Length: 238
Image (cartoon, rainbow, N blue to C red):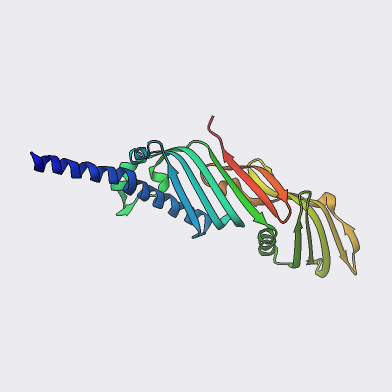
């Protein structure tokens, strides 16, 4: 009898360790790997919360909190990113035992449902400067200044085959779930053109399409600050 009781005691301890430690770690690692893939950053910390904690082993996660340093949003570099989600349901047996073509299933194959999601990103002057420089190869000597009111950019560019000084003011906006740069003033100076004001001819430039975001996130808000912009994208469950 003592041996049977000891066996069941050990079994209970193993099950508790599995539920409280092993399975949450497996899911945490799986989600972290997915974030690394999406953001192209190795500096990712991710945690899961559930009450009681053993519910994670049953596939129910109350909250996921994730912090990323120097990650990407689409093609745009961000100084930091944070992502918070709630009411996550996962297929835990599939995570443990499911295989496809001899490989473990991907996150989207085991994720059953997700509640509300919010992502916040901090994009610095240098991040936006690098993005515009890569986007427009004809731009040189780009300098950028962000304030709560506007973004000022000055650069040398090729206009009609000639070097010209470009002076531009603009803002970053969220529109229709996508992220745009909207110019509010654009002046070009060179020896041939002298001075050309093109404010009314400049259209919004898309920076990040919401289809590049995970979990059906949509950009909803941009807050300009000194030296940086704070981006917010959300997914709300009705």
